[in-house]
Length: 115
Length: 117
Image (tube, rainbow over all chains, first blue to last red; front, side, top):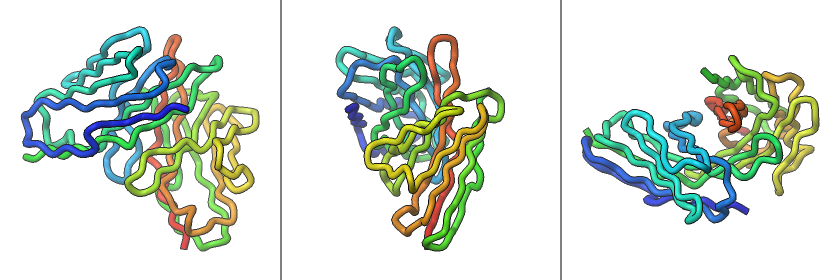
C-alpha cells in the first residue's frame, strides 16, 4: 500500500523567499505524480503533474522534480508571495489498470507566507 | 479547462437522515470519478471509485451500504450518506478523471461540508 510523507509539515517564511517542499513515497511503481494546493475549507487545485518518464515540470514560479527510483518529489516555489499561503499536497498515482486510479495523499505542508 | 462542481457546498442534517451529494464534470466527460473524505487537519482519504454504468469500488473500511454511489452518466456521480451519524461529519470531495493523451489527470470539486447533528 502506497504511503506518502511530506516534509516539513508546516512552514512560515517572509515573502520573497525561495521554498522547497519535499514529498516521499514508498511504492515507486507510479505512472505520474500530482502536486495540489488546498486553501482552507476548499477543494484541491492541481498545480503540476509529472509523468513517470519526466524528471521535472515547470509552471510559472513553480517547479516540481521527480526521482521515481528513490521515491521522492520536490516542489520549488520561487519568490514566494502571501497568495501562496495554503496547504500543499502531493499525490503519486499508481499503475493504472487500463484507466485512472485513485490517489493517495500525504498530510501536506501547511505554508504561510508573511507579508 | 476542466471544471468539477459539487452540490451542495455545505449541508447540515439530523442524525438518522440521508444526504445526497452531487459531483459534476462541467466541460468534459469522466468515465471515472472518485470520492474522498477529509477530517479536520487530516489528509484526503479515498473512499470509493465510481465508474460510469457499473458498481462502485469501495476502499477497505468504507461501508458500501452506508455510502451509496451512483454514476449514471459521464458527467454526474452522486454520493448518498444513509442514516447519517455525527461521526460522518466531514468534508467530502469528489474528483473526475480526464484523459490527457496517455495520462490521466484528476480534477477536484470544491468539496461539501457535511455536519450531522
